[in-house]
Length: 427
Image (tube, rainbow, N blue to C red; front, side, top):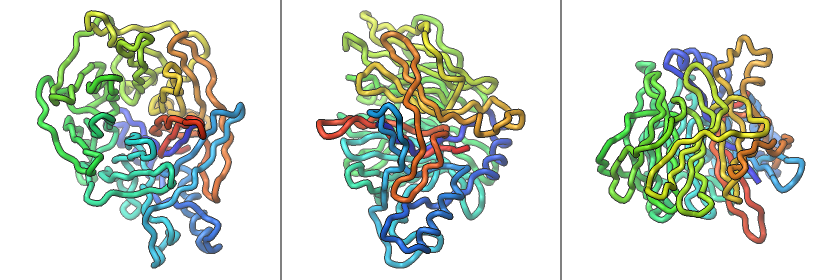
């Protein structure tokens, strides 16, 4: 199964960011999105419909589910509510669910145990000032209860287009890089800071890092190598300078290193995906890089970083792929499925395509399709097709979105596996 719920707003250099900012303000109205339950009054349902209709061309903040066990896929909103209720009515918001994350893009989403998902940061529009706001909040979604909860006294540093990597053995969330928009100076500030969230006590702290610290960046990837406590950072952008460098953070010593890698690296890029796939002999893994952009074009090529060399060496390779590939895109989702060899690519967009010259505007720039990449045969096949439906009275605005965050929820004897996706920018 797979679920959709938070999008990222793709940008290139600072000049294009300014141009996109004015476009985004025209298209996005940030409001609280709540589910319309059967026990609400008709007035409350109408209020909820007003809230959701204003979201049809903006960011998203609900969770949507796709059942991949069916030949015809169905996308539906998962009924969710806040863990906090209020007795006094709130203007413009139904009085049963106000503790939901605001619509956003450029956030991160991680599974922190079998039932809980953590969403952190991102960027949206302030409904009062209509200005960009970089978020520092943190929300936890309970899969069993289908409720959102915001931990108290757990405010992180504001950042968007950052990375968050979860270490299950240590129960730590490692956040690196990202950017913050300053509404006063209208400038983007990029950081190289590492922050750690102890998910047992929900406490942030800055570790004392050493070594070859990578430059600040956003739109990069940070992947945990299976069976290790090493996080591999690749790509990203800062001040219109795109990266294709690799840095490794050893979280046992908080020490950065730059590995020696054989072969030619992919072209510099940002807003790509990098998926860790265990090797066949379980002696290491490969990182599969797909898509991204570099300020002048979007990409749809596949590149592989093999970390399983017998002598400890790492190697870049560029496999020949068969089948029909996805169109060039950036800000897509990439999820390793339960077979540990198939990567699901979903959504994204091509911001290099001029919206004014595109006949369909955002409708053609933003993707709603999906593809499956078999990393054993290196073959592309079409992914699940989606049919938008409503659930519990709420809306999901269709499958097209970019910058969404995704993860796999493992199934058991009573349920199938699911891919959940949070937020996103909509056509």
